[in-house]
View (tube, rainbow, N blue to C red):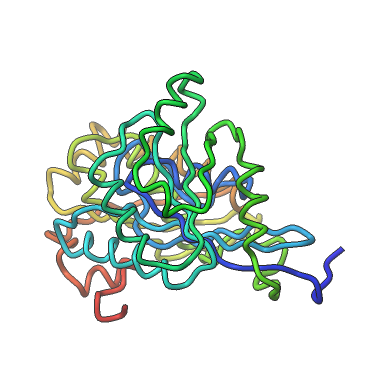
Amino acid sequence: MFNQNNYHSGFVAIVGRPNVGKSTLLNHIIGQKVAIMSDKAQTTRNKIHAIYTTDEVQIVFIDTPGIHKPKHELGEYMVKSAYSALDEVEVILMLVNSTEKIGPGDRFIMEKIAAYDTPKILAVNKIDQLDKEDLAAYLESIPNKDIFDQIIPLSALTGDNVDQLLKELTKEMPLGPQYYPEDQVTDHPEYFVVSEMIREQILQLTREEIPHSVAVTVDKMQKDEYDKVHVYANIIVERKSQKGIIIGKNGSMIKRIGSNARREIETLLGSKAFLELWVKVQPHWRDKRNLLNDFGYRPKTDY
């Protein structure tokens, strides 16, 4: 039973190199998809708030874009977004991938977060892919252990030891209000989540330069008299050749993207959906602040 006089709440920033499993962990904790997943780096571009609520605690997770060396204006936005999250939270949760050696990128992030007095937990992900000896060796190899209050091995995919992580995070939450209704799992509007589901399918189905050069915007979502949701969305690419790849021979690729995304959208909305996609070319959009703003990525002057 919810008791506002003895309720705990707070914010947790999830940081780490690209593709260490941050979105997978969030989706497991929340119990449904709130962040898109892909085996390609830099999948997350915005700070995504995912909300975990029980009768005793509400933890708002901030899934940050993977910290990396930026190559364009969009990359600058992503890294700034990741760092800004560290000023807003009760706990910094760093993820590392136990199937890869601790590298310069991990050390760089560790050095950055060491400057914060905020409690820090290191989650060692993908332990389902290691035997006990290899995991022990990996844990021994971790540098800068002293900056972390705890180190928790887990598997975001299978859920192994995720409950232990939640217990430790709950201990760090101060007395506070329930910021969001108990049935709300993200602070982003449906338009954003739907656009991300479409972008996820593009990431999964295309290769080469396409995943990093694409943005998705939703122009309109409306229900018809039969309670079917009509979604009208744009896929933005940088070159005509990329447009051809997205469309595919006789429209085969865009049909696959649309079909897969529609199933995800129907699960999200709980109703049948009609999805109409257009592909548009905007040369060098990742380096144009006005377009980044139009596509939902705030320019640096907004930080």
